[in-house]
Length: 470
Image (cartoon, rainbow, N blue to C red; front, side, top):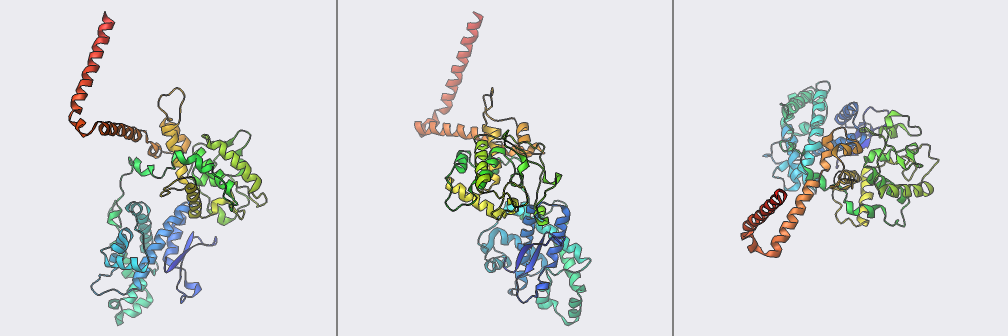
């Protein structure tokens, strides 16, 4: 962001995050952006996990930065500037950036340095809803006390600064009413409508291909956790233990990072994923406690697949002997370099480290790859490729994989089903090789050959029947 910075709120504040002005001319005690604080409190009251709260806060922070930049910029007189036009231009800013046909969006893309465009799926999944909720909170708050999101915009526009209105602007009454009316007009009116027209959610129910790109490749997975230790790494065995356990158990990243020593049964080579809110967590601060997350599991026990289970315990032994700090005051298994629980570290930094290891292991394209990709790999493997005794086709039943993944709804498990598409791909590969080897002219005789084969099958069936009745 150019004009603001997002920071974690002190534990004494009800909000999770604060948005602070970067303008040095603004006194320190006035830098907190009030409308955002109201929104953050609203998010906190809804009980979102910290990472979800952070994601929504980042989306809204960037939107506020955009609106603020518009408010301090000068545009040609033929450019329509209103609250609605500013809000709606943000969609074009995200999707098209500097190539946008919207003059507001294109100008802001230049001034804010937007180099990469946003995907429409991202707009539909979280961006649209987080901003819509923020504007609804603003609209509600404006009925009580005016906020300042669009204040600078109105004050800077000459048409809103007539003499008889200046006192009302200072008293906030006219400004609050104007903003409130504009927000009411901009917000969706009917159920199912979106703030941004292009944010219509697409049906991902059967979109299995969308998940195929984020599952870590099975053929590269062992190389990931069997690679050589970099000379400068101080937490190599910790990282490898985490990766191996994610691959072995299919656990969520938050579940694995929140493991405690008492959750490891070394004698029986078992690992338990337990709800951190169902027990006391001594030795962590209040801020660290706020970062705990739990989406829920039906079973605590994990079912580890090999060779990753064995590799996990190998790295675990080395981690505890060489890297683990036993005097840090808490018993969370995985620690940051400073000894604090690793689940409190920055997620983007963890994913960056993971991608570097994936690249070292031979993965050519790391786009869309993250720690969560190992969970997808586990689901894909157990549902499609895991050898099952007494069963010709590999893969566990869908209901079993649901239990393994800790899903509450079986539709969440269905996204890992890839066996059908893999079979289709194999069939097409065989058919295309057949045509390529025989030449293009073989297409002219393919129907004739089909009927000949069918006739041969019928003749064999007639011979079989005659043989049984003789």
